Image (cartoon, rainbow, N blue to C red; front, side):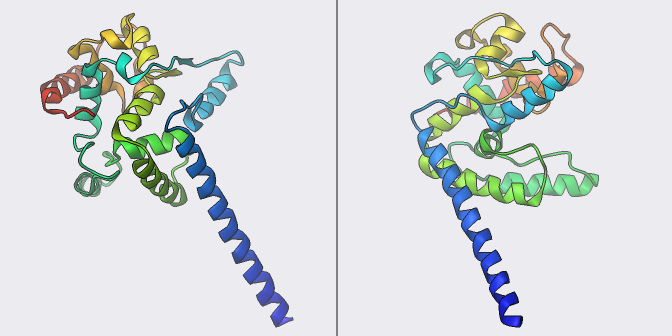
Length: 233
């Protein structure tokens, strides 16, 4: 009986290990494919449209892919200035930023700041659910390493700018520029780009034509002041 139980436990462990390896391989294949193919939809997009259709069965996402060269340099600088100033220098993780965020959260007694890089945010958007669990954080770390190892910084930023949310159901730079300003992503001014970058942490707060809040104005001005120092791939 004891031998039988040991065999069951060993078999169970082996099955779990095989499943884990299979999942990582599945992630790796997708990331490799996206080196020169654009993702049609991300895990986060799927999650958002499902939530939207709970209220409106006909709900659809606003999204149009544009190439890197058709996105304003102003938006690239604004996003890096706002989200990941060391984007070109790190290998997926900004350890100093993570430490500062942890210290700030500890001081406040709750989560008020994050230390996620553009690469980490892309990992979550592309392949993971919105659940906040320790296991998802482990997966995020593994996927981030894959992304940084396989893709160039330029490709990482191109995909990121095309898949993040900029309003309820509004995804990517082109849809965001049209939705908020009635122009293409290529024509964004520094001020408009900084405002879009300021929206990224809480994109569904801002609808088309909504008046700017004092927070958004302050955040936009801060990003605008940092944009000239942002290095872009």
